[in-house]
Length: 306
Image (cartoon, rainbow, N blue to C red):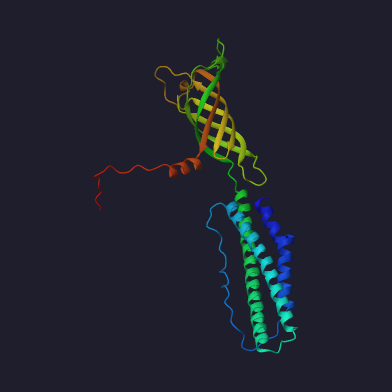
C-alpha cells in the first residue's frame, strides 16, 4: 500500500469509520444515572496532542502516522469491548435481587464510575485519532508539493572506462573527416574522471515508492584533455548510484596547444570511444562527506582567539 493510498484508506476505510461510529453512538445512547458520592477510580491521563514526527522525508512521516493510526484503531476497538463488558456488569448489578444492600449499591457506584471513565478515555482516543488523520493529510499535501517540484537536472561526478575505440576523426578548417585506420577494443583499464549534468525525465519509481529508479541523458566533460573531452550518453539512476553508458570523444594531445578561445585549439584528431561508468550526484556526495570522519588538528596546534 502506498503512503497516499494508506491515508485514504484510514480516512474513509471501514475500520476507522465503524470504530468511531460505534464509539460515538455508545457515548450518546448509554447515559448512566447519576449517583451520589461516586467512588473515585484511578485512570490514565489523556494523551497529549500528537505532533508530527521529526523526520525529514515526508513519505517516512506518512508511514509513521499510518502506523499510529492503525495502533489507535485497534485500541479503540479494545476500549469499546471493555465498555460493553462494564455496561453488561452494571445492568446485571441493577437487575439483581439484593440491589438494595450496601455492598450492591457500592458495587453499582464503582461500575457507574468505571463506565464514565471509559467514556472519557474513548473520547480522548477518538479526538487523538482525528488529529493523527489531519497530520497525515497535511503530510500528504506536502509530499504532493515535493513531487511537483521534482528535480529533472542533477549534477553528477564519476569515472568512465573506455570499451571500444572507433576510427579517429579529423577536425579541420574544412570540416570533420574520417581518417584512415580501424577501430577495436581497448586494452588495459583506464579510468577518466568526468563531471556532467544528468537529465532524468523518465520516472520508473515503483507504486509504493520504496525504490528510486530514473532514466535519462548525460552530458559532460572529462578530466583528461579538458575541455576537449566530451561525454554523452544514457544514465540510469538506481537510488543514489548512476549507471552510465555512451560515447566519449576526446581530442588527441600533442605539443603546445593554443588557447581554448582560438579555433586552432579544437582542430586535430578526435577519438570517439564507447564507454561505461559510474557516478554520484551532489546530494550523495554531501551525504558521503557527513559520514566520512573529519581530519583532526595536529597535536599541539592551538589557535589563539582574536
